[in-house]
Image (cartoon, rainbow, N blue to C red; front, top):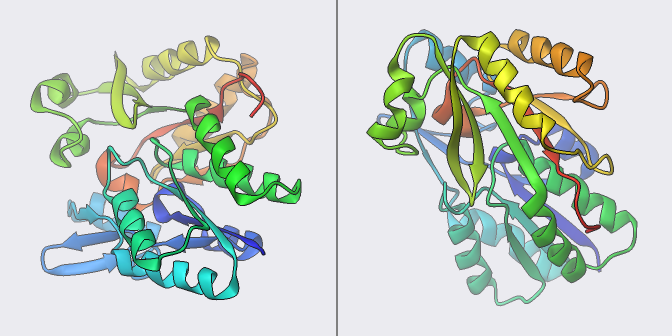
Length: 284
């Protein structure tokens, strides 16, 4: 019995990663007016940011249908394989709900659904961990339990250019987003209990970067897991952050940089940068 790893496009697992690792990626959907496109299938990340920045077109995101999950679950059932689905926070999307419904339709016990209660490369780190534990010989049930523990230590810290997109996407109230509408206010955000939380707001990107690094000073990175730098549309901010954080000894080395795709990019816009890592704790 093999173990199949499944995730969604919000985890920033590229097509190259999918091919190399044998991971199944379920696409989220973007709707522009009457046109619905699948993330990574009908629209690329570059095309998405061109529309977002150039045309000011903000799509509506939606979770995959249960049928997309059911198709993969039935393939696994027929082969006698286990499935571990590592998915975008249920507090941000109905993706977990779709997968859960599909599991009930499949009538197959060897499906394990993990709600990351997180977003972007947090999902990729958990996919990385699952693949590592498969190599170590753990079974699907043990891996799913280990992921439930691991997710409590996965951290996303980021600076975004504006709170406008989080507000328009319904992820923040008007009051929460209020100061973000002022020119040059750069919020530092994280995810807590699956939802976006504002840690601080700074006047200008340099001050925001310092505040981001101040947040990192209070956390110890678990080096057994990857560290990912993330950015949306503009890589330069991420490069500057890597350099500054590296000089201060806050990052372990040359971390891979992942561009935030359309699913999450819709809600944060361009110009964001940050870091995703596992905080040191008890051994998973």
